[in-house]
Length: 333
Image 1 (cartoon, rainbow, N blue to C red):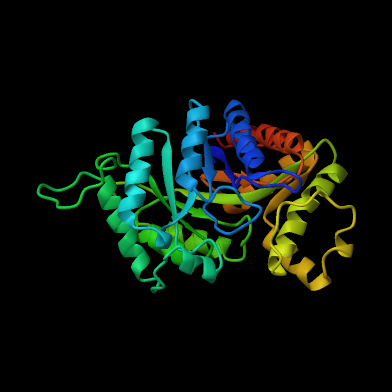
Image 2 (cartoon, helix red, strand yellow; image 1 turned 30 degrees about the vertical axis):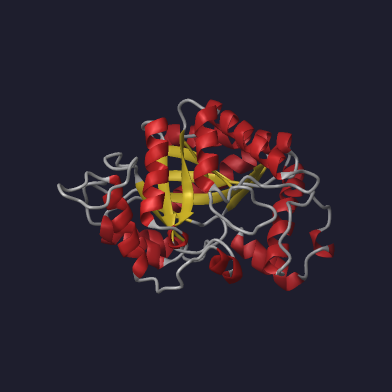
């Protein structure tokens, strides 16, 4: 493993405002940079009361402006929601403002419900259009051919690194075919992780972007001084995820002592499975669990994410995880 990074959704906690969430996002980014994280990615979601990162390019700019070294990017932009030219202009602008620090991860899901997708004026077309949109976008970020009638200004010639994101074999196949880096959303959909990594690595075709495959694996984390406290703090995210599964999305709730009283058993089983690629506990526990993930999947990079209701506890969680991840990177080296 070469690097460790953070995925953030700028969670809006109960009792707080979107402005609070955005301030917390910037605060966490500064802490992440000081702790040695390599990237700070933000994800596009819409019509979600508990997520404040919907204007993803805007918040990427805020994080990049508040930091100096850490790479900042999208994990990801849901490309079918946007014209490739507009995305190229946005990320080309970011690349000029923050040279050498901007990443662009692309997904093909709407990042929302279908009613909101229609409100976004999203074209309801087949998945076969996604590869063409990706290649069109990469073309706008590259060196435009002589006589090109449409150019991304800013954007042209910035060569912003493009990643393919996914939670199934489709993204793995596309990333391998195009010779792009690949990030798997195992923090909420781990079922196909092993198979997707195998497909990506075995089918990878060297390209102008990468000579060999580069795979990022996502994991949930919640670290605290004791195992019991970490489990308690993580109940906020588990309850939030359960409510989403039950069609009741909302702001991030405070932790609860008894999840069974809040979540029906069949929903709890779904949540446990969806969030199973995770490290939760005291520092030694988190180190051991992260080491097991790295040993099993051999990622080139591990990106961690976790929602904790109390902001100070969330900062502490990522700082504890950074110590473990730093050690795992040293061992790999």
